[in-house]
Image (tube, rainbow, N blue to C red):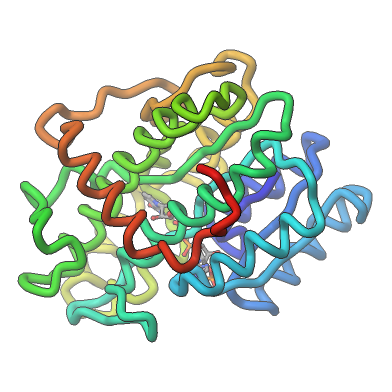
Length: 288
Ligand SMILES: NC(=O)c1ccc[n+]([C@@H]2O[C@H](COP(=O)([O-])OP(=O)(O)OC[C@H]3O[C@@H](n4cnc5c(N)ncnc54)[C@H](OP(=O)(O)O)[C@@H]3O)[C@@H](O)[C@H]2O)c1
């Protein structure tokens, strides 16, 4: 089972719990030291052969591709992919060296590309599950500008985060259609919202004094990382959700996506956008 963004917060908790439950866990992080610390923590608890680690900056498509290639060269089968890594940025729009707005790069382009590139080994599993972490923020900030997906105009931290978490729901609702078309029937794709937990997520966005104040007020209401990780673990392992696909879950229960924030047309626009911007980074030999 591969967990991205396992060096901190909800991903760390998810990976440790899965390892304790006896699953072989591959952890991913972007920072070698932080990732090694979680690796060591898991290796203390379980057989060292049951944990592995990879480093990649998921804001870059080139690194997402390299991560997928490295994993595929070592593992011929993947049972669970948990797209957990995510980020939130500050007041001003930041762009990666590949030209993408950072929130969109990490929260939609990376999970899209990683999932796409790992289909080869997910389809080798008897029954594979892709679990992707979104957020209840998906319904904030009003209608999204589908003619300006990366918010070159009217960027704000709140919009970038909310729209990215909305778009990734659409992407993960589209994957079941893709695999169905290709005759692959062993992979499910579901989305989680983990509630609100005190993690590293607000590291950049709460540098602003007002946001820092709001965060302090909200902190007592936040969930533990154990509770926030519970829906990831449920979707990755529970027999109750065997065969369930394209659904949105919170607190281990299926939740309805507000119809105002979903349409098949909008889903297709975001899917095509991700296909286009990742064209050079998708394996040409891959027939999907
Ligand atoms: N906490 C909440 O209340 C909340 C609510 C709704 C949704 N979520 C979602 O839950 C997921 C986990 O977040 P969290 O709250 O646990 O936050 P976190 O503590 O900041 O963990 C995020 C993880 O993603 C990694 N990451 C961030 N940017 C990356 C990049 N460019 N490349 C590779 N890895 C990167 C982080 O690595 P580093 O250790 O190097 O920072 C960390 O391992 C995210 O998708 C987040 O949007 C969280």
